[in-house]
Amino acid sequence: MRDADVVVVGMGAAGLSLAHRMAARHPRDAARVLLLDAPAGRLRPPERTWCYWEAPGGEYDAVLTASWDRLRVHGPDGRPVEVATAPYRYKMLRSADLERLVAYRTEGLPGWTRAEATVRTVRDVPGGAEACGTGADGRERAWTGRWVFDSRPPHPLPPARTTWWQVFSGWYLRTGHAAFDPAVADLMDFRTPQPAQGLSFGYVLPIGPRDALVEYTEFRRTPPAAAAYDAMLRQYATGVLGLTDWQVTAAEHGAIPMTDARFPRRAGRSVFRVGTAGGATRPATGYTFAGTRRQTAAVADALERGRVPVPPAAHRPRARAMDAVLLRALDTGRVDGPQLLTRLWRSVPAARLLGFLDGTASPAADLMVGLRTPVLPMLRTAAELPFVRRRSPPPAA
Image 1: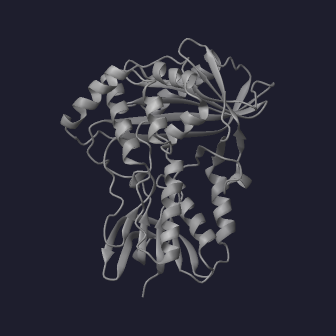
Image 2: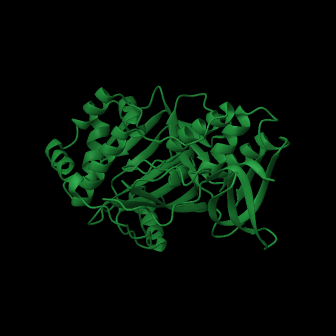
Image 3: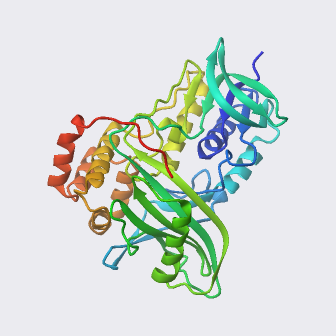
C-alpha cells in the first residue's frame, strides 16, 4: 500500500510552490499528499529571498516582505537609470513566509502529511515510485507514491556548452539613520569592481528607510569561496553605498547554475523533477522563481484533471536559444555584460524588457530587444554554437 498518491521531495521554492498549488486546486478528498523535508542541517535549504515581477494581486501578495513599482540600474560609469515597472510590480518574498503560508493552507487537509527525511534516491517501482533514505528516527526506509516529484538541487549538473554560476552574498542591514529610499529597488549596480572574467553587481532591496537587503553578486565560471563574497559585500556597502552605521540582522548566501544544459523533467514513469532540477532556472539571468511557478501550476492542473503530471518546460525554446547565445558571448568575452545590460535598461521600455527577461514576450518584442544588443558578436556566437561540444562542468566552490 502506498504512503501517498503524491510525494514531494524537498521543501525549497519548488516543493513549497507545488504544495501551495495542490492545496489550492484540489478538493479536500482528492489525493493523499506526503511532503518530505530535509532535517535541519546542511541538506535543508537555508532561508532565502525570492524576487519576481507580476501584476498586483498575485497569490503570494499577502505574505510579501515588500514590493516596488520603480527599479534603478547604475551603469559602470555611475549614471543611474530609473524606470517604472507598470503593469508589473517587483515583489520580494522570504522563504520563511512562504513556508508559513503553505503550513496554513495545508493544515488539517485530510490525507496531507509532512515528514523529515534525508532522501538519497528516487526511483520507479511497480505501480508508482519510491523515495529512499533515512527518516527522522535514523532508520532506513522508503516512501512510496503514485507520483514522486523531486525538487532537490541537481548534482552533478548535466553536460553543457557553457556553464556559469551566479553566486551571491546578502545581508539584511539596519542602519542608524535613514539611508534607503523604500520607493525604489536597485536591481543592478555595476559600480562594483568587475572581475577579469564574468561580471559583478550590487543589489539593494529597501524594506524601509533604515532597513534593506543588500547583496553582492557575481556571474562567473569558477567562483571563489563564500568568505571572499562577504569581503566584497562589505566593500560595496561601505565604499559604494557609503553606509557607516549599520548592523547585520540576517544573512544569506547561494549559488545558482546558469547553464545551457538540458535538464530532464521526467526521470522515470512516475518520477518527475521540478524547479532548478527540472530546468526552471533561466540560463542567462539565474531567475528561477517565475519558471518554477509555471511548472508547478501546470503540474497541479494535470493532477486535478487526472492526467500524467509531466512538468512542462519552464522556458520557451526561443528563450533558451537566446540565452545560450548570450551565455556563450559573455563567456568568450565578445560582449561586455555590464555595458550590455545597462544599455538595455536605458533603451528598452521597462515592461517590454521585463517580459523579455521572463521569457513571456512575443517574437516581435524579443527581436526588438535583440536589436539593442551588439548584433555582430551575437551573430558570430550563434553561428559557432552548434559546433561547441557539451562538457560536464566543474562544481561550484
